[in-house]
Length: 389
Image (tube, rainbow, N blue to C red; front, top):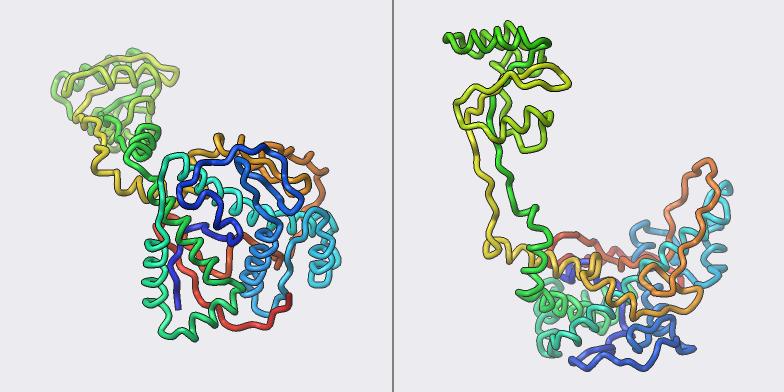
């Protein structure tokens, strides 16, 4: 059975109170409390939240490879994670690579915790709210559609290590992300990506390239006296791509051809023979045969698609990353690139690549099958497996 949730809405329970209800963003400093791993605009991300969702993600990872143990990353030293990986990894895998696998899985979970807090903070800043009733309605509809009985849903929760509150929180973040895709946000995205919605002017052209000026003049004279482009190009052209096709170049975009030829193509009137044009490759004759004007899809036609894109990428590619990173402080040993106090590690010395085992440590992907690029993704109730905490 499947339960719909938003893409990359992966791991959060204890963060449910942060920013919920349109509260003003707190500004009580950036120190990280002792029971927390990060603070976002004065609001803590607790160690409990990280531990819970690290476990949920690890359960999901173990179910991708049935029979694999549940291994939860344990920052900042990752001693238990590394020791557990050593038991299942080939002896040739170095300690550094085992630790890297643990760190990577932790960072994915931590990223979700941080970025879901960003979504709530941005929603509060824009006075965007989602009611508990709306969240419950979405959840109930999906649950009833995708689980035939309460027992099936209970089994799904047990198998994935999740609670109802976990899934409700995912729906809340999903709905907030959708509401943050406001008309102003859609318009700003459209403006920033305008080339993606535009098709440049294109021109069909016929050319003949010769090695010398005298050959080009001879070809021009032949054309002027009624010889066909097919015969003339075949006789005079040294361009292998067009000499046997009547010199035809289709759908030429400004800037594609050598500079001198390009300038002529995009200034000439249709049906007027141009040249000889000197270039580093020889001498060109050119004649534009068709012009297709540039077009731009209007915002109104693209707004629905952009709104979906913004909702889907609120976590994977948040437009407010710079703003909220500046408000995010993480505990040392728990930093990720989204933390303002993150310092990238120095590159390790290169060694001969060794295949790394698929880690069964916590992943920010819960026990789910996720599909990017859609408004919703699906969480599939996994086949029961034996796992250990």
